[in-house]
Image (cartoon, rainbow, N blue to C red; front, side, top):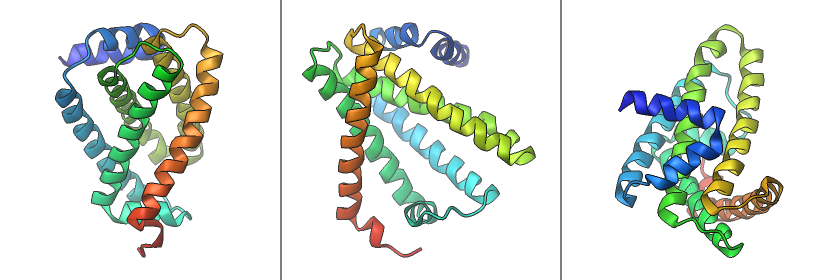
Length: 193
């Protein structure tokens, strides 16, 4: 199992469309992907807490609120993950894609796990050289976006990465708006640390 994970991690980096095809062809049942999502979110919250202890406090009030409330951070991360999967499915279907929701959810969870692995790999660098860690962390977000575009293109059978790129940007803005609206309904912005 561990060797399979390592192989898929390497393939995700080297040949993202092929990795996406393997994930789409071997999509687990939705409840299994949901279990994996809970594990990934929980590990992400733990990593966020560790990083918060090592790094200076962020100046963003929302980030401070989330870091001070691990359960709220987990809920927010899960909401964002589910919203992203819904968008991957719905936007893809709107443009004639062939991907199913279970597949969209599975690849979204997998990419979140991939990012988590990269962030864990950067922890030692953060302890030694923070400026270098910040630069590498920024590069991981560009890498994530590139992988995301490739995974969505493969999932839905789209040929043009540029069109998927444009659709991803548009959907990203829409998701951000919905996400901030949901946080406002929950009163997250008004909470005190």
